[in-house]
Length: 408
Image (cartoon, rainbow, N blue to C red; front, side, top):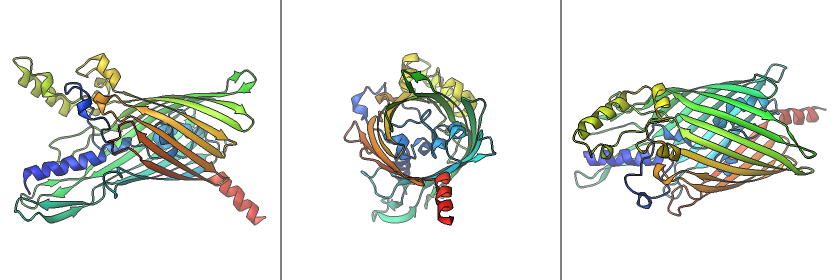
């Protein structure tokens, strides 16, 4: 297998694991296109239908079974004793038909004071089957087939620190297996593993607007604070997609049994921008300065990278602002049994251009709730266009009540 083929395979694997670029580079100047690069990018993909239907938000929405991804500190304010959620997302179906994200999440309230909760989740991203062919010999035969995948398993703990505020922590193990072996040289691309942690907070209050009691909340979540990953025996390393999420949500009643929630989330990757040679070409010592900057980036610790990420963009503060993704959405609920949702996610074109509208609906019984969402990308050529998500959740209080009635 030639080096070009190995390069193409790496590009294919990277493109499948990334949330794919929706706006073409032709839409912006080459010097402006500068996305933040990370490893294990599938950790940033929204797993559940509710959050994705509202434009990819959930830092301050009502607690649900999938709060582990959005803001695990919300579990301390969950209404039910416990619950379990299963989500499935066929990914990039406009390109291939065997890539998917599966997610299992749940929580359980601890003690009798209803002040703390234990939570956990498991996410598995399959990149399907990849056949590696040898065109160097002229026959183009399939030499080997690989099944790359990534998964993450985590546990969390959340607790109320007051009647209105809670905090939570999560510990996570991550494995990214994109490994393959070159049949000619014997070189291998190995699986990468890492450890990460999340820190989050959630505040909720109930102000009176006119004669109606409303709900106002805000929250934050810093996710995937952890070690780097390497696919080549430690020769090079990639940062985890450490992310800062800030959000707010306001819910108000429309009439009896009817309510409307409006939410806003801001997201920024806390990952330093990788130096580009083009930014150093105008100086006599450009190559040397670039090499020095690249070495500092490659050896930078993840914690240093978090602080560096606020001030290292080549375009200064204006470019730092472009790294902030904006999500806003709404959820209409009837008697907490029927839900309609819509939202919009915006990402600057120079940072990836993954902007899209989202829609969804849900139906809840005492025990089971089914949610679905649909993504409509602003660029028709986007592989993310027409992405569907499905989530099935089980409420433990409802199940216990149902079993109790049957026994009687």
